[in-house]
Image (cartoon, rainbow, N blue to C red; front, side):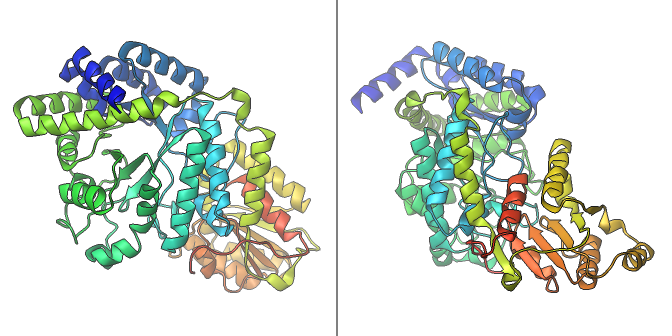
Length: 521
């Protein structure tokens, strides 16, 4: 401890305060065309680190080499490490450079009923992120279901029971840590400003439910927490986002829950239009509230403006200066005690056979039969009719769509693909009914269908007509409530090709799959 103190004191003496204050800021690299600018900003201004979006990681050639070069230059210039973070939660669209291992969503992991699955997923994630020089993963999501219900990320929660979710979160954190990557759980208390309900007005309810997974993660020493925007009316004004609330950060997170490690904001200008506050003002307010690091923008120029504002505020406000200085001490302590141990893994680790085999076992274990257990195994005698719902179609890239069609051909031999069902007129539906036998197998691959949509209405009519219908849900299984007339309903929880293959593997088995629903529907 004394050695660490001495090292930090040397850093404070070596660099002027206005230089080292950049440690309290991280930039969010959302688009590949901003990567170079953010790298320069980090090196020029001693930014605490960068968050690299999964889209940038998957689309940037030699991203691992670029991040390694950045890390080496940063270490050489400042004498300590840069935080290089991403958000790999599992499941949806989270591609790494090929080859990589596809993993189930958190809800898919929760469906296994085995918390060791969370450990394995975290461990594989860490090993593969390390090949790219990523040292922090902003994961797992510690929020209870329903999570981001209006924004289509329903499967990113492990489940709806506090005790179960707590165990999965803890095991995922341990898996990441033992794999060599540090975890920042999220989002405390929830992510978006508009996620209001009565439970946020009762501290006793919050401690029993929403806070429990976070508290468990804090007890096992998770390295960081991402503050969300959702206000807590039981603690502060209902119009004050939690990341801007001194009462939430200091009184609840630090004192009430005893958290002693890194506290970071969510990106302030990416995804929540409900909050109207300029990034410069928000960043200063967030640091005053007790956050150690702010993530002000996906725009490099805005990040530089925020830095200037923080420096000016520290020059004129002695209390703020001391607050920032304490944050700097915590950030540098984290870097010197944790990040110095980080080691990059060889490229061959990513997408290795052993990783893919372990992941495949979790996928198989997650498949859950919601309806039609007595109908096993899958049988059909004519050319199936297949529907891929609109949201699933939207999130798949062209290469994924081709692979999905190839997978369906392998499983079904031949089939007819019915597209854009939400646009089908009554006349087109009647023609389909006349020209297709009612005993034709109807297979629907669904993903978080909007129950009020025209598409949902058409799908329900089709399921009523075709007696042999199977729904494979690749998101939250809550959508299966729409299809009470379906012969078989399968929950696969993850919008991926691997989940589809696992669902077919389960359907062809003589015995029902092992999974169980991690949420009430």
